[in-house]
Picture 1 (tube, protein in one colour):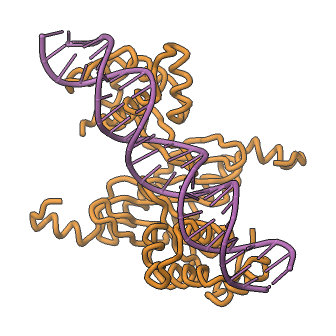
Picture 2 (cartoon, helix red, strand yellow; picture 1 turned 90 degrees about the vertical axis):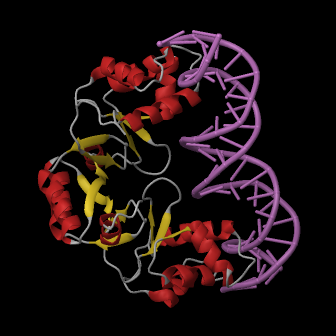
Picture 3 (cartoon, each protein chain N blue to C red; picture 1 turned 120 degrees about the horizontal axis):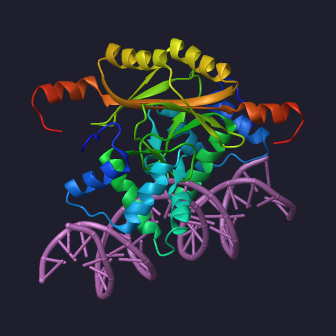
Length: 155
Length: 155
DNA sequence: ATGGATGCAAAGTATTTGCAACCTG
DNA sequence: CAGGTTGCAAATACTTTGCATCCAT
């Protein structure tokens, strides 16, 4: 339930984990370094694969347990774009944003549009709701894929 | 890939199904009537339960196969709010809308905010994307639950 | 009568959990 | 050295699929 310092950093995560009375293990260190050091949206499987490059013995179960801990701590966001696996993304030192998802190549571009954020709050308030959070994903074709399509390349 | 007539109706679905060379069975009729006749967002399990009230023998597999067919025909929308099962919602005679989801009681209220729709198009276009569709869910506490909370009722 | 549809059970995904061994604090 | 953590395998939740039978056209 803790909201961490905005720019806690990896060391801060270690300290926060210990402060919670949970342990800082080599597995957790590898997972945190990999996920927090990446600016990508990684699925549990992708994260597992990368982490196994450091330590072959790390299991998928530990990856799942660790990302769930990090999500619960508020330092990682869980995203669910299309169907299939969820993705995980570092929340450290980053402001809220939404996503453009390319339906052709899968690339994800982040954006923040303050006018939309304001209108979302207005929509909720006008209808008597209190807004907690939201999810907004825009699906379309990215500039690169549009160019490829224009060049006649089949999808 | 067919985009159906906006107000096709249940008979129109039967005709469209036959036009595609697939068959109109009692199971499909029961499922279509139940889902299209409901203004709720139903999970496959909820739909299966309701449909079994008409015909005990209808299997979950048939429910899944039928909703997938209807989604592919464009007459039903598949929604994935939180975790867990997907929900299905009739698209017939309805315009696009987004959702407010109560994190306390799960109720779903639909809304349409043209200014947000315009800004989504603008966000995509400005960044060189072509927008195909989007998903926007606002999570918060509905008026009823807010009143209950104000009255001191624990969640 | 013919090939799509159904029910059933088994298989698939994605993720979680029980448990004994292990290791951090 | 106490209790949280790990790897493994089994379990879970949701959905899809193979197959023999059935039935809509």
